[in-house]
Image (cartoon, rainbow, N blue to C red; front, side, top):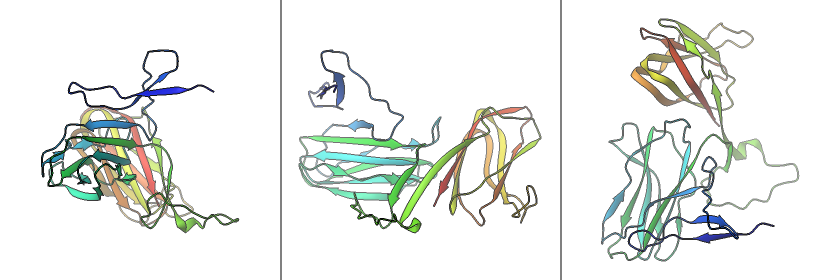
Length: 277
């Protein structure tokens, strides 16, 4: 079996940074694959003064991959508090999760699922100046996640022989649609979706900024294009190339209408649909 060693490289102030594995017998570093959940990125290791606050710059969840969850780890030689916050506009922030970080103990927020466009980590130091401090973030997206309802941290379950009841689990799955699809100026395209939960997340990515709307209605069961109600706006792009929204579903058969309101044809990178149970 291959063995791996780990080294904590030092920064300019001789404080340890993020761990990097390298192959036994070699001196070249191997950077972990970051497209899977669990990779941790060092945000800061600069010690804070008494009552000082570290605010991460607001991070946009929209990109080539939609970030669905984040996780924070913090270690310090003095007690403090770690907050996960989210925002619709990057200016007004609300707390999604907070933990107390005890001195000389590694604090862990656990995976925190996001619903707004921007997120950030905020750390508030206690009444004593730190000598040692490290704050890490992990990001997750695109994979299916299973978590136990009820807010338990790292739960231990006794699973019956016939399995867990479906209502005991919450799942989140993401699908990608309309990749490289072109919508001509002034025209619309349609997409029927089989919803797997009670909420739907929609994220649209284009190759260029334009005016485009994503509207939604519901299909009458047993038909392909007869709708229960009129279309309602979910996403409206005005000279923009991306946006994401989360909506409550009224039925399990949503139908999307994407309309190019610009003056030139537009190509879609992809439309990411996330199912929330």
